[in-house]
Length: 448
Ligand code: ADP
Image (cartoon, rainbow, N blue to C red):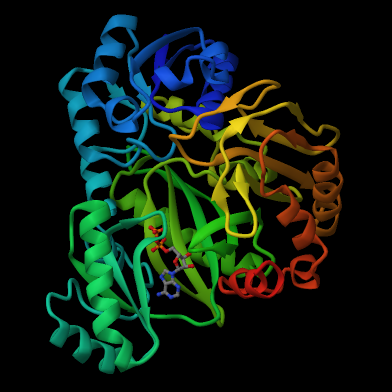
């Protein structure tokens, strides 16, 4: 096991990794921009080092600063968290060139899965079912129109380099194609420097189901069931749960095995998530995330496993601490993402926290880097915390979530907490009967 690792991230996920390190007897190094000198992850890590000015490009995304921080502190490995450099193959290569271990998969696997067209081709070849659509990239509008007619409208045009819900445009009919094609390309170019796009059938009533996988890098892999992340706004997850309300043990076994076999075949190392749309009992692959997900705690809750600990074990050459047979689901877990945003338009709302009180009690976990008096800087993501509950079954988890939300106090800035109070009163949320488009409709009717 490593003696010391550096965490190339901030906020709740940096704190999350510090906690795992402390329990494992591994020393942790926090990095921070000048805007984050007073951040909780800086206070909680064993060491902290400033890596640049507020702008992410010059701090949390700077290869040189992070590698220099490793050299100065003697950190042997880097945990990237999620976002920032967590899926940057060039960064992984740069670390390797400096003999620093990346806690995650190889640069090659990250590159393969980071390009969505290549990822889809790879998964198809590994026997994973995919959304019907174009075979590879679609270079011209004429191609797009031909494929649209073949696949059948509605279709979605997606940037191969897209992520975070960006670079995707829906064409409801052939008349929309020109506009959607050009705007998906432009968004891909502007946000990711790559204007290549591909086309998929646009599914109208799917759920978002993702499978957590874990490989040891030596051809062994397991799956840790699914998470249902169907409550989304602008293709971004708002609430996640495990197990999925409409996934039977048979469906789980079937898709789980397809996924663990696929990653075993490529000697995948570490945590990964294979994302699917799920409609009429069929799974359709959309993308793979080669990192820890924001919503990983719901999986940890139902399996009683620390996924960050397993990431460190695998990266240091140790085996996983469990086998597939030992993974038994216990109860139900739900996570809500608390953002510093002002409703109804979800405008980021940075500022000073005048009071913070985290809920507690049986089955409640609050992953947050907030504290009384903390000033949320305006430069980064608006996620300020995740409230995760665990109950014996879904109704118990829902009741616990409502109770815990009632205890949670975040004063000084606007947050998405009222949204969850309102959602929990909805019958569709109580029964779990919704698809990925439900929340957008609900927001239009209830918040507009
Ligand atoms: P990103 O990398 O930006 O997260 P994904 O490919 O994972 O993009 O898609 C994010 C979300 O976009 C999905 O969870 C789903 O809500 C929607 N989406 C993506 N592909 C389709 C599709 N073919 N049909 C309907 N919705 C889709």
